[in-house]
Image 1 (cartoon, rainbow, N blue to C red):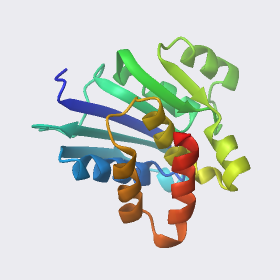
Image 2: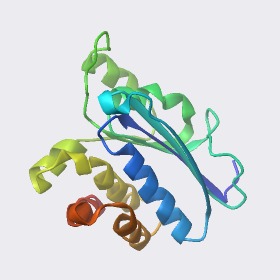
Image 3: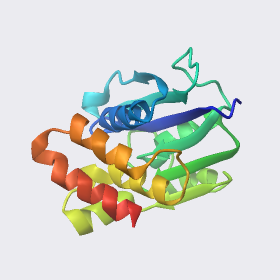
Length: 188
């Protein structure tokens, strides 16, 4: 994989803010002078269905889709969806996953999902929803919290200021302050 490219898979379910997270990351990467390509699949997202987004940035990015085994970072807002997209990872991929299960009919148990997730290398399971609910009063900011954490762990090659500028552009004014706080909590 070329060193002048970075590939991120975002996964979760409808209502968790995957598309907003995608837009924030894309804008931040663009502000830093990168070519940016993205794609998302969100068929039944308004009904809690699966949402997966691909984001690539760097120099000479031709396709928005990430090939199997080519993701540098996996941001999962829900454990089952994070496991479902694990085939995009390679041995050095960083998994930053919100430890939250949104069960659906005939899904694996939380125990089985976690057993399989724990087989992955470079896995960071984080109680992002719980932390955001306790510290900010809203778990919907879990994705932005994970962005702050990714910057903190040096898992993503973007500057914090670029993310903050992108939040200002992407997030409606009435939710900006909450998202700034979520990002800073993750950053610390």
